[in-house]
Amino acid sequence: MEKLIVSGGASLKGVVQIGGSKNSCLPILAASLLTPEKCVVRNVPDLMDTRVMCKILRWLGVHVSHDRKAGVIEMRAENPLGVAPYELVRQMRASVCLLGPLLGRLHNCKVSLPGGCVIGNRPIDQHIKGLSRLGAEMKVENGYVHARCDELVGTDVFMGGRFGSTVTGTANILMAAVRARGTTIIDCAACEPEIADLANFLIKMGAKITGAGGPTIEVQGVEELHGADHAVIPDRIEAGTFMVAAAVTGGDVEIKGACAPHLNAVRDKLEEAGVTVTRTNGTIRVWGGAKCRPLEITTMPYPGFPTDMQAQMCALMAITPGISVVTEKIYPNRFMHLSEMARLGADVALESNTAIIKGVNRLSGAPVMASDLRASAGLVLAALVADGETDIKRIYHIDRGYEHIDQKLRELGAVIERVDDQED
Ligand code: EPZ
Image 1 (cartoon, rainbow, N blue to C red):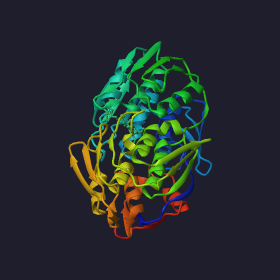
Image 2: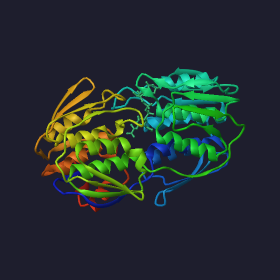
Image 3: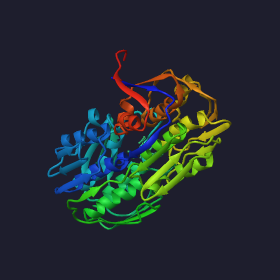
Image 4: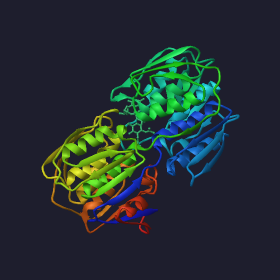
């Protein structure tokens, strides 16, 4: 296993290029199962999760060629199998996105339940409810979701759950509804840009979809879909992470290739904290020179403040004078990073789904353990401002979602090294 060794104190300066969105890419790759024709997906980030999705698609019999350097995946699903086994699905939760396209294409499939997740309980009841509404007979048995139907029939589907709309649930219903007979109205749909991106890919395949990116999506089912060529949108969470990296280190970073409107909630909070953020010609520039002010942050579905940026903001608030309050409304238990940040000297307390963070003057390096993707990003940011050296173990989590993060940070002046972890 590998670990990162970070020597804190450098102020980040320079330009960073943002890659394609992981969370757009994964359902889009799954959507290629809907046609026997060739699909080409571009701007694919070189991540563990995209490689796992390719592995699963190959297992299903899809011909996949992945040019990792160019960020291009070509796929042809002539005769896909309808079974996705536990050994593969457990490697990545997003493989639940196979349900919708496999059902749409084959009318019969069996996908393993994804299993536990360190960021909290992640049920799939809304996915199951939505696909049942479209006429599928859904059964959960022996750790698998079995879905079958003679045909899918368009209807209205309400996707709002206890913690808001579900993103991959909306993606699944969309990918099944494009092959249903008649019209489907998805109400309380997730509004995340990744859903609009998936819909744009499906439209290129011949689907008839309006309203994606908003709370009501209308889908007119079609009899067949054809191949398509699509470049995925930039990764808003990678961009947001570099915005906070600039702020926390008091740096000056130009973030290129991001879609600025997707980052309004992050920008708004950084500005409220006293960070300067400007946008010109596709570049977001963040100066973190001034002393920050504490914040109250509540995570919400898009366009609210993203849960996937919560850990990174906790790192910033840890060294911001005053008391910050961070409430997690999507995954109430997504606070594994707090105890590790406390090892670096952060003054944090947790009350139910709310973190109370009392800003300290300095953090100091210590060994810490990454627990999930965004928690790892939060720890890297905290380590960048901690005095001395921080060892971050189990960084395979960060490699699931950030493309060459250590290299990109090094190019901005961070002192960060990736080494084999002999002790693990
Ligand atoms: C997506 O997960 C993202 N993953 C997550 O990114 C992100 O944190 C999350 O959306 C929220 O924005 C991908 O897109 C691959 P949800 P998803 O279903 O779709 C509850 C990252 O770090 N819920 O929108 O699985 C659920 O428990 C990851 O990149 C139900 O109750 O999340 C949560 O409280 C982690 N029943 C809320 O809804 C369901 O059937 C939102 O979850 C489904 C979800």
